[in-house]
Image (cartoon, rainbow, N blue to C red; front, side):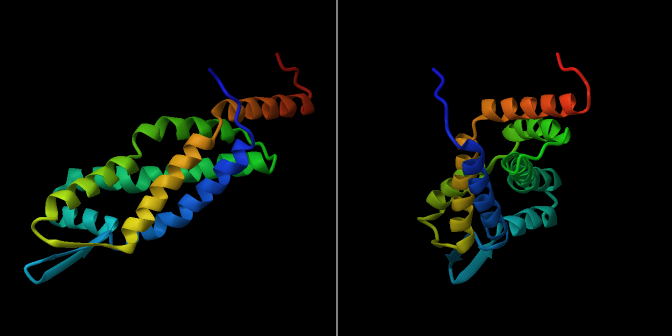
Length: 179
């Protein structure tokens, strides 16, 4: 059964802006501090991908960067563009393309899978080392929650309906009859 959600464009816009604010510290700040045998190691998401490159795990490093950094950022930027444009009642033909691309890259942005990997590695390492969560972990958790909320609060039927309505108005204003 379908239930109509109200004010989804502005709500999703607010969550998207919050997620983008959390994005920078989530990928640049230390995720956790690992102290084992007197040696302390701290690593950020970008630093982890850099270590993979140094160790010559090129494919793994590229996949890590793509699925945990580039595609989630692109997805948030596309959602920001679409929701911001619709909230300002601005229409351009590339909004269709942008929203379609946003929907297609959904499977490739794996923030939740990366967070699950962090949790599993922390549980496995607890008996061997002292682990302290870093600011990057909390920012990453906030990024994950706000990006999920941005996606779940958005009513895609409403977005498509608004896009089609705006396109029809644009065609009618230009003297083209719509079907």
